[in-house]
Length: 380
Ligand SMILES: [Zn+2]
Image (cartoon, rainbow, N blue to C red; front, side, top):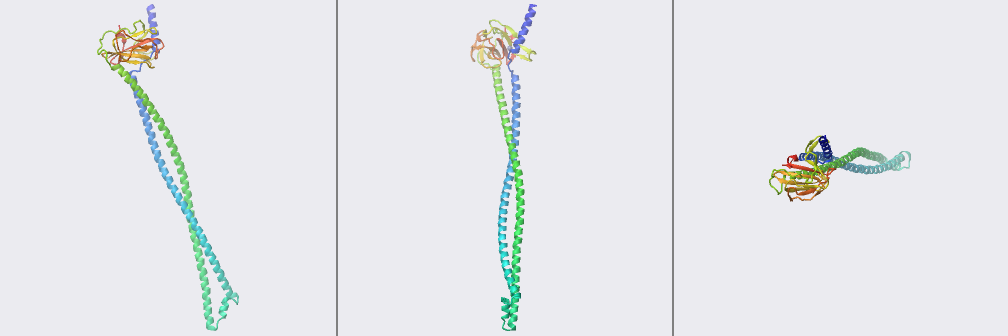
């Protein structure tokens, strides 16, 4: 009964400890995260390229509209010039009409007075001319001459009327042309205003795409940063697993020493767990009083000392040669340095609860060629 109870208690403590212990990102987990980061980078870059393409085509569209606007504007300038010149011509024609009219009126007046004198007043110049004749022959000559004068006066008036009418007609033609020009100008101004709004719209689209580009660039950069960090982590893991540096070149293959010489109990075994969370527990948890000694399980070279804030807390790794590496996690204090050769049983650290751990314990791993194995088979 006592034995059953203690096993039950051990399992209970183990579940508790496991729940609070940290488990390292394995190489495959890291690789999976890296490929996820790669996907994120690829997607962000694809989105970025799409936004850039869209922006380029919007810029092209904007340029097209710009060109159309400058064409329309130069057309409006041209039309304004034409309208101004038509106005000048009209003013000139008006002046010409006035002059022609004045001349005509003057001549009409003169002609009328001469004719009137001829028919109504006996003392007019015409009559004087006629009655001043010396004989019949002279008189008839004078009648002929008079008729000629009258005819000529009328002809002059007719010609002047015609000339004036021609100017009036020319003015009407110019006015018609001016009206056409004004219609064209109104049309051009309407086109310009619709092109102006199209331009504003394109500018807005370009600005929006600019924002999108910024966001995509930021996303790509962040994913790249994340990937770089993961790669560094993976590199560390790989070097920790596979890079023997100095010390013993081969592993004796013998049993390792218990890593906590002052005792301790296994609170969580190595292996696959389904409770409280699913996953692999890559090491052995040994529960023991805070500050107890952590000793090298075998002679070897310290290849990694981490005093950071990882899930492992403060931890170190020792390479024993022959592809065998041990790892000691959650310590409160590490007393060796990278590159240092340590003897079997030499103090390397002190028990703590750093990283993802709430109770003092040692998370002890044995890795063979980079793969965590059950330490139980390796320790006495
Ligand atoms: Zn553990």
